[in-house]
Amino acid sequence: MKNAEWFERARQVIPGGVDSPVRSFRAVGGTPYTVVSGRGAYVEDVEGRSYLDFVQSYGASLLGHAHPDVVAALREAVELGTTFGAPTRGEVLLAELLVSRVPGLEQVRFVSSGTEAVMSAVRLARGATGRSRIVKFDGCYHGHSDGLLVAGGSGVAQLGLPGSAGVTAGAVADTVVAPYNEVPELDETVAAVLVEPVAANMNLVAPREGFLEGLRAECDRVGALLIFDEVITGFRLDFGGAEPFFSVTPDLYCFGKVIGGGLPVGAFGGRRETLSHLAPSGPVYQAGTLSGNPLATTAGLAVLERVRPTDYDELSRRVDRFGAGLEEAVASAGLVARAPRVGPLLGLYLAREPFEAPRNIAEARVLCDNGLYAPFFHALLERGVALAPGAYEILFVSMAHREEDLSRTLDLVADAAALAAAS
Image 1: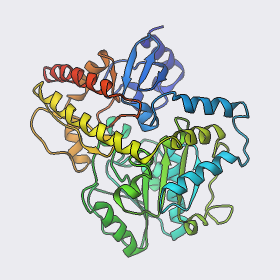
Image 2: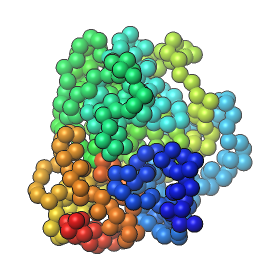
Image 3: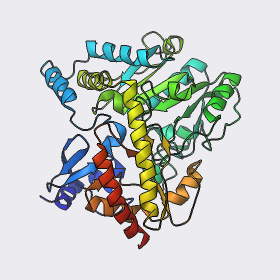
Image 4: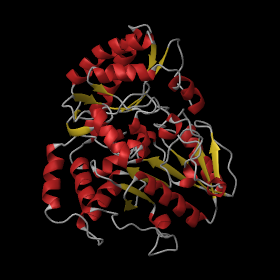
């Protein structure tokens, strides 16, 4: 069966044919490819076509797809059982590893997704402070819980939605939206400020100098908690995530993606005193049958035990060279590109005229919606290079991407940019 046939078959039994909206290709047009397998930096679809993959499950695959060490660990673990609804050794070992690498993290609780992690951290912040209001930033995506969908990035932005139908006014009444990279003035009604340390759901927007430090100081001034949503940055930006990278310590952390080694997972944590408010010790209830799943913790351990700080340094250097190459390749075709980099994280904006790298969603939206990304995306896809099917996402270079993979991509980027310029 062809990709089109599989997609039509999916549309009969899955809403829109996909289990996450961005996969539908709605933002770029055309028919999505259906993946059969992945290995290293590559995936293969049902038609047998191979793609150099810069999606990497939106950052979850730090080592690339089907890394032999991860596969071997999972084979061994699955023989012992897949879920128990009881404490397991793996969740303790992974929690110990996370706590050992993040200086301000004293305790952590596992959940099954990044959405759950953020939702639970927000509930904990409200319970610990006795306050109701949450401040988030326009264009930052924190999962699909009701109170946080307002003014979201990622798929919400790509579909042109201000939020979501089905979310009541009451659900967002205590959510305050501020511009990214501007420190809002808080008062004593604010329980927490929730922020992506690096905004990676409006393409890539780096925090300006002093922004994260300013949020820390303003939260301290009014007694609010600072929450870092590190579902993307956690253990992909740096060996210990955003805190050591920026030297700013939040009160609560939210993790996902990398810590599950490619399996569904999430986690939130912080100081022991704050986490003591969680049931069964405290009055803030949170639970999950599959939380701390033994396969997810096994895969997460297999990934995180394998990487060293020097691996992140090398990946950052590789991404920096690749980003500069992207800008040059696009320029050779008559367009203008900015490929902002923060450590190993990489964005890509295209335009016909010179521009500065965006500082917020308003500036990012002008570039993401200028019509250049879709033809650029399809031209690369036809040449065997898969980017995310939407201009609000970033590129993920895994540790499995070789220099020759990146060099070959740059040759193809020039051709794709030329086609986009002529569109």
